[in-house]
Length: 247
Image (cartoon, rainbow, N blue to C red; front, side, top):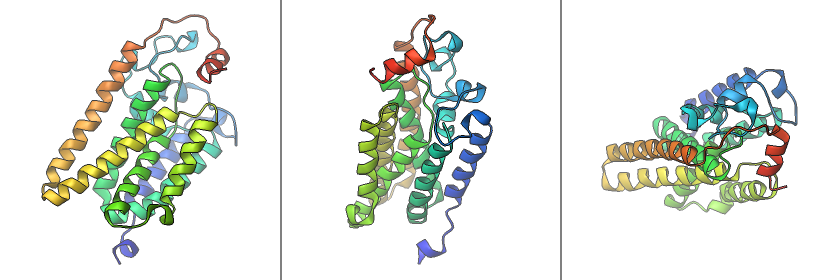
């Protein structure tokens, strides 16, 4: 009855924010395929540092810490944002009524930051955009919640969704599997913390622990970016992309 009567307001708000930010990227993103370019993506995507001359002085290593957040609201094209928003809607309709608006927002935020950390650990010199890290976190949180409620994960469809997306992450070149794994772990851990706190009747400690994870993810992103900082040389974006894909 609760799931029928509760409106997933946070889910709707997150979808709206992602769509609005996508529209600000300009015409380069308005295609079914291809990579978005332009100031918004270059200034907002997750990036530690870059050897590309056009991105000289850009990245978390140069003080642009906001990128670990903004990168999670940018997308490459219509297909990219369309698939992500569909999965966000699917998971939000299932998860938000079960755990509540505040916890939904906390899990999403922790997953987004953990996903940015994962992306920087794996590919600190490539621009990474997309809500996939946060969405993978919602998958992990849904799996934990279903297991706690003794709901078969595979029969619910969430288990298959996680498995399919993991296969895609590791088989299609150019996908930030580091961001996906980081988000998945972040969301699952956040939900586990909430479950443990509920059993111990100390919900306030769960929010404090999630805040620690969020701050720790940001601090680790900064440390990783600083440790992997590279000097700017005259490298073309195409060459950097091929190197990041192992070609």
